[in-house]
Amino acid sequence: MFQSELPYDDSFVGTDGYVGYKVSSNVLTHEGHGLGVYIIGGGLQNVRSGILAPATAVLTNMLTLVIAGSIDQFQNVLCLFVEPGSDSTQCFQGTDNQGIGVYLPSTPELLSVAAA
Image (tube, rainbow, N blue to C red; front, side, top):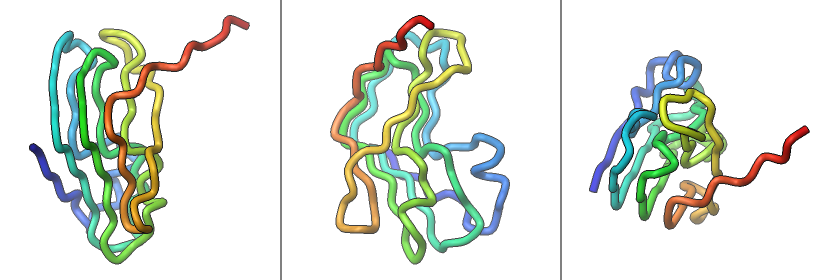
C-alpha cells in the first residue's frame, strides 16, 4: 500500500509532470496494490495524473482524492507509458467515488491506436 499527499502550495506540481506515484518507463515488472494520491485544497494544482507507470505494471485499487477542492484537479488516475523507454503515455480517468475521489480497480489494457 502507498499513500502520497501532493504539496498544496506549489503550482508547479501539475505543470512539470510530477505525480504522487511514478515507476520508470524502463521497468519491465512492477506490482502496486492500494495506491492513493491526494491533494488538500483547491486552487493551485491541476495534475495530469496521480499515478504514472509502464504498461507492464500490475496495479490494483488506485485512488485519487481531493479534500476541500475539486476532483477535476486530477485529470486522470493513471497514465501508462506506451512502451519501454518512451515518454509517450495513455491515460485513464477512473470512476467518480462520491464526488471527492476517483477510483480505478486495476491496470487497464492500452487502447490500440489505428494507423493513419
